[in-house]
Structures are given as structure tokens and as C-alpha cells.
Image (cartoon, rainbow, N blue to C red; front, side):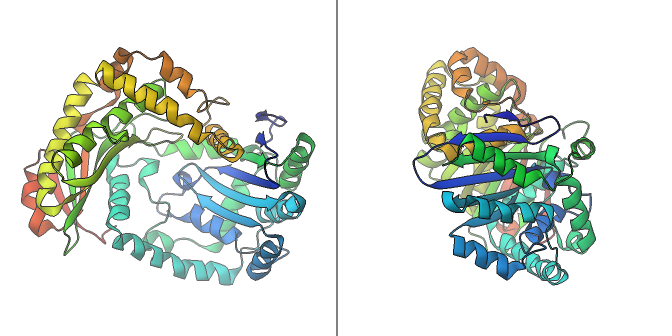
Length: 438
């Protein structure tokens, strides 16, 4: 079996075989993810996934964990913007047993009432941990305010208000509706052959409904804003007794897989993806304002943020924002030099082997491509696209896709010390909010 659809209306299946070690990794991606949480019920997909991991019809949570321990195996769930994932690791000789556990989780999760109640008590503690972490808090606020109304702007964890709206049957219904054969991307890597891979896919899907993706697709894309927000804005997230300001600057940009993706990969490397990048040189090396400064186009199935980040001392937060916006505007207008493009291209092409060095890495990239509805091998073939780009192509992409006049700035810091300087930094209308308001 190779990359591609296993059968009509079935899952997408990716196999990367390697007999280096007697181990098999598997990822089952369930399309949808946090971006398809109902409005006002943010956190539902995370809740459903974690609840599914806490027991099946055959084993409660303790029995499931004990069985995995006895097999020397792992079985975990994760939630991203675009998918819920069930991933595992097994010794080759125990693969069938571990796959049976994963199949039970997919087809017959227990969704026990006591685990549901326990999870609802635990999640607010995670919210508190994020509020204590300035960097995580800055990212949470930036996601929310960058493009109001965008599905990616809503938190996958939830809020105190949205958690109160999550009931057990909503989690059950979400899982049953989305865990269908045609809504899965199944990745297998390691010590596995074609016949074993076919058997694994059958075991994972034989008890699932065949289809359900069409209705889900309409729901995921329904909540997108008609147009990106315009004009600069600054959100100062007021948190007492800070000595630093966690800063985020950016705007809604293109999806990963857009025709400008390769050009933007070079553009982001030049501006903020390497130690020699412009942001690092200007912010850290020349001025010592932040230990690090970087940028990236977020990788997702739908349009997502181009985001700049750094953590500056509170006394230089305003100047750091002003300089960042100035550098960003100049870069959007003029783009990188020929030499910068050549160096960034060499860096990216040279780094790619480290991202595809193992069968597991190749499988995970291929699964991500499939979740993003990209052609098979899209990411692996990016070095070829990078090599075909001229510097002028990168500069043209910067002009098309970078929008410094619409940049949103989020600063997590103490308003009393930083507000005046941030208001004068050129980031547009400044709004002050309490750090625990969201």
C-alpha cells in the first residue's frame, strides 16, 4: 500500500515502511478539530477527544492504561485547529493488540459520566496555567483578536463560559458524527509491510460508519469572516508586576498550500526564521531588546496568521513595537535582497533532510498534507519549488501577502508602565484589557 485513498469513500492512508527498529508508529487524524467547535461551545472537540481516551466499552480508564503499560505501548490523543488525532506506538509483535485498543477508542469509547465530570473540573486548572504563562497568554489573545470571527481565532481549550455549555451527550454526538471512515487520515510508519498495513486499516475502520465528511466540511468553513480586518490595532493585556512584554504582531494571511507558500517560506526565513534574520539582528544583536525574535506563516488548512513574536523588556516594549512595524513595512514594500534569498533558500533546502530523516517524520508530514487537502508529497517536494524561485518572485509575494498597515499588536505586560510608550508606537488604536478577561 502506498500514499493515496485506500478505497472509494474510505480513509486516506499513508505508509512509510522502515525495518530499522521493531517499532510501529501510527497516527489517525480525524478531520474537523477545534475550528469546528460550535460557536459558544469552544473546547468541545478537546473534551470529546480526552474523554474518548479515558476508557472504552471493554476497558475503563485504569484498565486501558494498565493494558498499554503491559504491552510497552502508548496511545494518546491531540487536538489541533484542523483535526483530532489518535496516535500510538507499539512493538511490532504487539501491534495487533494495540491497534485493537485504538479501534475500540474510535468505535466504542466509554464516555463515562464520572470521567466527563472530572475532566470539566480539570480543564479550568489548565486555563489558570495559561494565564500564568505570559507567552501562552499572548498567543491566546493574539489568536482571538487577529481576525475577529475566524474559526482559528477561537480557543481549542475553551473558556469558563464555554466549558459550562459542554455536556456529555454533545461530546458523544461530536465523536460519532466525525469518526467516520471517509473522515480519517491514517498514517503508519516503521516496521510494517503492505499486508499488515491493510489489516491495520481494516481493523481501525470496520466498525465505523462509512461516510460523514461532506456535512462536516460545510460546518468547518461556514464560520470564516468575509474579509480580513483592516487597519492597525493594539491590544494591551494588562497583567500586574511584569518586567517584560510578550509581543505578537501580525495579520490574517494565506493558507499553507497557497501558490505563494514556497516564496513566503523564504520570506519568513529572511525576516525572522534564522539567527541571521533581520528581526534577530535588529532586535537582539544590535539592541539587546529581546533574547529572540521571529516570524512564521502558521501552517493550517484554511487561511491563517503571519505572526511576529518577541519578549522585550517592559522599558523598551514601545520602541520594540515601533521598530518591528517599521521593519515590517519596509520588508513588505521591498522584500529581501538577492543575497538574502540565496542564503535563505540554501538554509531551507539544507534543513529539509532533518525533517524527513525518519519514517515517522515522513508519515507525519504526509498525514498533515492530507488533512490540509494538499496533493500527496506536497511538503516533501517544497525544496524543488524553492529552487525554482527567483528573488523577484519572493519580493512579489511579499508585496501581495504581507500587510503591515493591517497589523494587530498584542502586548502582555503591565499597563501602568508600558501603556504610554505602546500608544506612541504606531500600532493604531490601543485597547487595554485585563489578562483574565478571556
